[in-house]
Amino acid sequence: MTMDRENSKIFSKTDKMKMLYEAKAEDVEFSAAEADAEDLEAQVRAQEADNRQLHEILKKE
Image 1 (cartoon, rainbow, N blue to C red):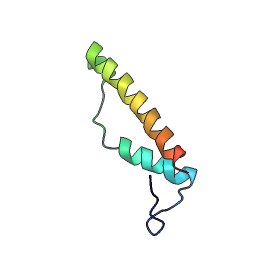
Image 2: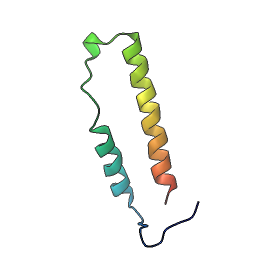
Image 3: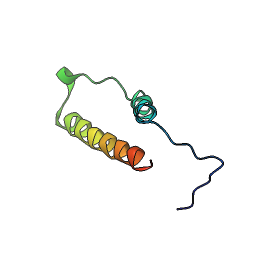
């Protein structure tokens, strides 16, 4: 992977967390009372994806 020095930026941990929270802001409302097994499974997959995304953001330092 080549790095474009003109457009590269080193993000602080705070900036990285903001990026993750902004991405999560696109999520739809979740109601645990109305959730079925598929909804709960989707929520687990979403959390795992968030963890992978955060790992990738932190790895780019």
